[in-house]
Image 1 (cartoon, protein in one colour):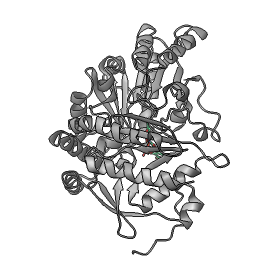
Image 2 (image 1 turned 45 degrees about the vertical axis):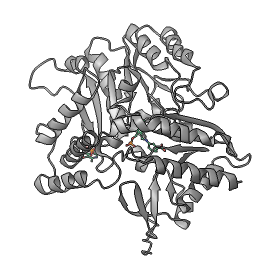
Image 3 (image 1 turned 90 degrees about the vertical axis):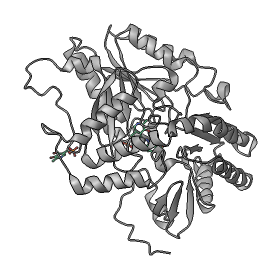
Image 4 (image 1 turned 180 degrees about the vertical axis):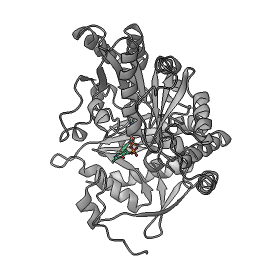
Length: 437
Ligand code: PXG
Ligand code: PLP
């Protein structure tokens, strides 16, 4: 066992810091489907890092691309200068995205991609002669990162509570999670399409033509894999079309293979006006996010004097050479290894395996789509989240990494997972659930 480093100074994100520091879990290496922990044990990764590492860990082709780039061009500002990788990547993403989403703005995270998309949406209406369109619509239980824009449209209460006042002019649709009607649905639930009509009520309730954009995760990930009811996204799209509202899909989790297609937009056959990506964009290796923008919106900015900056927005590290190299190599690997198709083929097997847990103790719901899955547990009466936490710790002890959010277990494995490994995860959870109180 390697010595544990000093733990005091690092303020860890989204972590119970005091508990962690008395019960540390450290990862020291990774390869393929496995992490190696501080004791040298192999831990099967059931969550692709954090919905990121779709091709598995330390893929040699991606590692080599990053190493080569680090020795060739370490950094180049993206403001009034460029480097080939960022342009090449933008073209690759435009080719892979739904038709029309053909311009790409680079960020360094999903949170920055979300704030960028919201700013582009408002600025577009300003430039397009509709400056009154400033209202933004998110959804309860939505997660859109942790910037002020993202938490304003986001709907996870704990992420908002202490940080107000947040952006004005923001409203939230109801969550599509209807456990009393849809529990244990396989794939898309049957009930709840009418929840999209709340948007029609919002449109009618304010001054006409004042909504700038609606932002949703096609499948809500962070809140515990909330799959949209059949027809719901289509109906949002129709309402946005009819009323001149931009539709933003936050595909930070669903983008690049998670549902067995390049994007959730493809999977559902619904084309947004803007789309965010991050996470699997570089297979989790180097931080990077992106906003894919419809050509018509981009064109709205390409007006006025040719020498004038069209959008006063950008990050020091936008289109960073290392991130661009990592992303290009990741897209190569996804294509070479046919990983989106693999995810599509595994999805029914994954579904079948997860739903075997339907009758296990404490389980009150199982949800799934593509390679996104959730097992929701009944919370302990006096201590919500603690039962799931206990399962997390016990699973880690047994060599499986899962993720919990409140009392829901999320499973979102690398797309290279084998059928046997899916079976191993489910069997391990079955064993733990029989014993946990
Ligand atoms: N949008 C969505 C839909 C996300 O899932 C972000 C934006 C923000 O991305 P960054 O790169 O800024 O973190 C995310 C991130 C969880 C969990 O427990 C999920 C995320 C982040 C942290 C925890 O499922 N997703
Ligand atoms: N803060 C200061 C003082 C800066 O100079 C900059 C960028 O130049 C930033 C914040 C923003 O940093 P980034 O561009 O990495 O988001």
